[in-house]
Image (cartoon, rainbow, N blue to C red; front, side):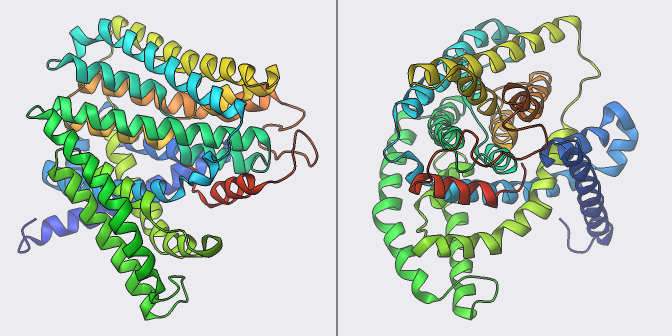
Length: 439
């Protein structure tokens, strides 16, 4: 942006104020109907887009030069979000997991991956021009992903955090997301061309470096002081160090050709948690408000601006129906089958299928990455956003229908209903669930 052009500065500030106000209003409206805020915030972007306002008015509100600046801010917001997701994916959830978690994780990930890859082939000719492997892998990932943050919020709102159902769902979502990010890294490497093997080979030592060198250094640096809101200057210095580190990590993976979201996620995953999670809480208390209140809504609204359903044809509606069937059916059947093999009863298994269908912001990040590198076109992007919002919106109501007497719609689980004794992994799940903004 030209520092000597005040009109651009005014435009940017006004657009930020408009985005913040409309996103908060639409997010509150979504929560009023028992839905995650992300649904309302994406719809805010759709409301500001060409289909409703027209090309001229939408272009006047968001000129191309201002939209590029907003995109840069949104990119920082996604990097911070991915860091937070990495921090919250506690590996304590994965320790000592039982048969139900193991089988549900396998089936709820592998079946959607396979169905997504199969659906990609008939869609490829009309939506992609390039390396077919990248498109097929992307579609497989898009069908298999589960939004850990949104799922954690639903589990907290429904009083499931200390139940076997809740902890199993969180563990399965953690595994699915880890697999999805690995596969998405392959998609980026394939789609952007060049020496794919060289890029992936460099990623392995980078991960080793983060685990063996960066994590111990962060643990030592955390001795600077508590990073809580009332902490001393030394604590604020540690938070500044963390912010600088995650941005450097994001820049490194972007330089490697693997996209910046992976570096931010990895930095969050190697962050030390501290005693009883106090270090993690202090960092989250400093970073989460800026990310959740301003930067992520910018990303949501920009994502909604790219959605254009006004030009959909009958064949597009047929493709949307196929996408919905594969997305919902693959996850639900995979989770249900795995849970039954793991020893859960039919209703608990169906509830797991409903919960793991939540896609939320995680799906939007995946779609944003692949749209940016040219793996899919805007028409298919719009269809996939509709799928992501629909599956997220259905999770809560479906859960209430499957277990109405235990978890009524909009209510909390009743004490002593379907619960098991609280163990360490469930305490972790309760903590993770209680912290997330409803995205």
